[in-house]
Image (cartoon, rainbow, N blue to C red; front, side, top):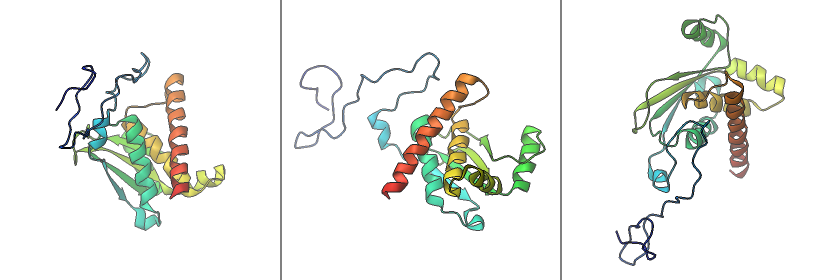
Length: 197
């Protein structure tokens, strides 16, 4: 490492041709407000961390493309929990199965669209972070009601479930507004990404 030319700030590693190997970290980034959860800021060095592993169960049964679902998880974690490098499992099921899970874990004897189960902190590669269970049958009904493509609705549910894994909630008005705003931004980014591929 060599000191920066101005003598201030961080030093950057250089190769034999004196070009920086790693960019300097921008210290001018705003800190979270008091109402925001105190998460460590994403630095440029964090972008070198391995991406989380996303496992999809049930995609063949429901004839669903895995790539957009994995992308929804990765983009959500990049924004909401950038230090997570572990494993997220997406389980695609029917109303009967999600109703059974809802009854067992939430004491609600009815089908729902998505459930999230925290498993660990997922800070290391391969370490479990959590599971998101989506009822494809409910997603289909909701997609028809919203006049939206099924994949778009499934991405919305996966973003929602992944945000719950990251500590977001919607029981209080301010929390709900923050969570739904982030969901809309993430879905807009995913649609842009799908349009360019």
